[in-house]
Amino acid sequence: MRATLNIPDEIIAEVQEITGEKTKTRAIVAGLKEFIRLQIFTIDKHFELIPGVRIYDYDEIEI
Image (cartoon, rainbow, N blue to C red; front, side, top):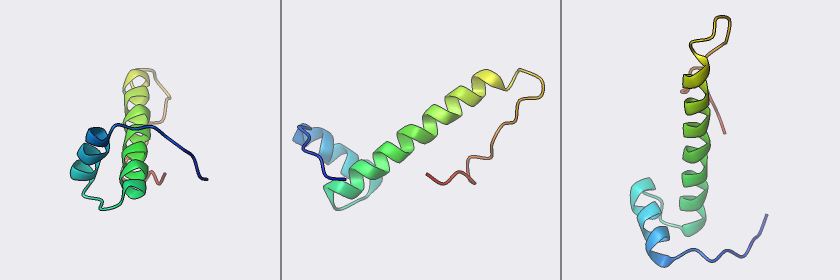
């Protein structure tokens, strides 16, 4: 999907540095995948105290 986004250059540069990606597209995709993974992790941490709730192995999650 193509989209036009207005993202400040310094944020793109920081994401590229953190992710190690050379292209803006790959850096943004990597950053979004990590954001999703962290959101799932945070939600599971809230539910792990509830008996019977399954907690996923985050190494097995493919986004």
